[in-house]
Image (cartoon, rainbow, N blue to C red; front, top):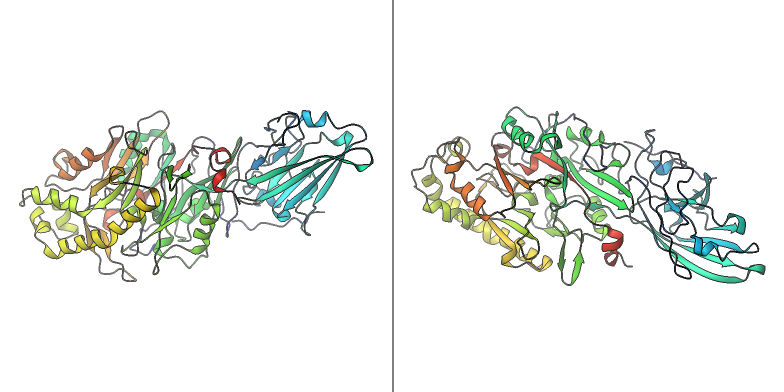
Length: 574
């Protein structure tokens, strides 16, 4: 008898991005929903539908798993079985489904059935022996609700024999974790136990894959605050019912939540990766738990730094670099010797292998997030189909030095102490500081991206940006955006609609109400691909004044855009 366990359910310093939340439940489009309690340490995902390997077309099993396997060819090989880990809670009983016996509503089981061409060679005196090798504690084969192979809580059941009469039996296959890997050996034995045929069926659970900006957006979230009504209204008007307002006292929804997916043929598990920052939005993320949606946490509560927030965790679009195809892009995050996210999370991301993470230095920033000076957007006209946006102080000073120096800057006078364009241009210390930031901090990251991603200057757009030194930062960090970081933007590319960018309004003008007279807005427009609709939104008081911007205060769920079992197996070879 299997020993079933009971599952436990479940920086932003003020300079990091800050806030708190109770949320408005919302479902992301195309099969994601809302999620639930976080788990620790790296397992966890679930999906909708089910998938399988080889089949005789036998419909649903008693547990509700759907047989979507292919038939294979006579005298060919039995096909691999790909699935998702059974980490959601389809029956709502508070346990991850891996810790339950199979039940009718569990849609994360995968059907294994020997195909007709194989069964046609099984005579009345034959038997079929199934044996499982690999981590038996991470896999189960169920037959009629009883464990046949795999985890039994006592070392695992390694083999099962089918009589000829039972050879067409359908097994429900269950994976415990991301990238669970095993091999099912199928031996056909003739009269007297003579071995006639041996097949090996690879079994592999999905990796957890983070989303990138080129994937279609399903839903955008932001938190309502006292001074962000204009920004929320801009999102609402542009996105309609695909935009959801969360009612919580914590505006930094990007920092609390990172969406990921685990998929298999006919299945999808949405993973709401929950940061260890554990501010009021933590309850919102845990409340997203639903069938096919699972909140999960990697790391120890109470050990967070600003670098554990998810403005410091992004993914490039798909690319080829060093002769290797990365169909799901590559993860990147900020880490150096003196700072970085918890290794519990980054080790987990490394272990997924498909998105080959890159660490870049963000320790020079007060908040320390990658989204403060880099972003990737799709571009149909680009050589690689995307552009890297990178902060550039020289581009900013080129514009500033050409402007009438008497131009008044009301927003900057109140917050940053610069009353006019000339006041910024004439501040020699500020200019020297920004030159050093560009040469010493930003350009080494650009060089790293060029080397790791095979980028050239043609793949990069330089965004006018200025930084200032913040005196009350910890750990020697100091830099933050002086001009609202236009690179800290949100990409909302809904299905069937033009792609949209929501950008912080730089307010680099005398008349705050007239965006048409803003030279930085004009410069940004001129740099962007033609396919985008651009929305410059007022994030000044709620976000910019608190060392964040639009991307920090929003979150986007996205539709998986490729199949790892056809496009990324080369990255999972042992």
